[in-house]
View 1 (cartoon, rainbow, N blue to C red):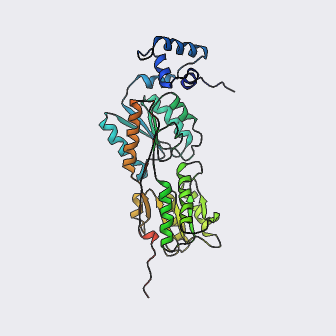
View 2 (cartoon, rainbow, N blue to C red):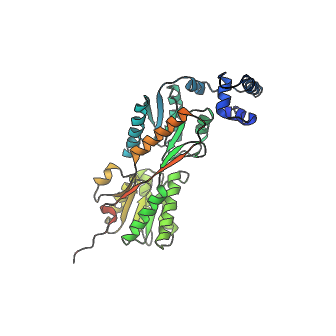
View 3 (cartoon, rainbow, N blue to C red):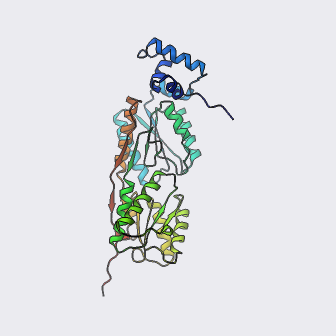
Length: 342
């Protein structure tokens, strides 16, 4: 088994100083005393520390470029977030390089390597749906390279992030269904390790409790965020002895797939099954019936992610903070039953 590379963090911990202090000491920064610089270098030699050449290149060279990694470039959600990032970056005289992960962990890692070769100064990232191992991001933070997460996040004790109020949004959807006479409410979640899956699941459960509806585990389904997987989850729900009379999904893509399967079986939305989604994609207003969905302040999310990034550029020792943005449930035809005229 290969021996783990000694990091700046290891040296900093042993000396009882910050990672930034160690980094500056190794570069003979004038802010660090000669005595401490000598102590840092001696320990680095003793521990056979060798700097990551790519990371050092980023630290020493200002390229005015930010690497942005998103799961895809197709959905309005991510394109709108990118617009917000670009707006703030432009004000600061920075450029944005965008790379899609296509929901792949390996592609996400490859993007990081390629963007580092392009000499970006840091990263703004939304995790792929496959990402449950965060070691590649830990390497970034240990190298003092600015990193910010948005929407799908991890390492919140180390990395700044901006998210939406998924818990309250899911709770609101559940209560809205109940107020429209739904009593068998189902939720199609995403991979368990994603923060948005857990937060929306918890909101769903709280919403059921608010409405004095018992939790039925058969109504909690899961998919891998693809339309095919969402369709399979919908079929399992529709095959139940008492199928749900309302379904919401972790995002609009999941719910569009559910709507398609519901119609294939000759069922009516919203008469037989009410639907609601998340992220309020453009297509929510062009499908029939129009889709009820949670609207995210996506451009604002991008702007705040960029602001958090520039806070790090100014001071890498800034304590990581998480910003939570409010959402809005936009009620449309798919979740409101209209009484038939007699």
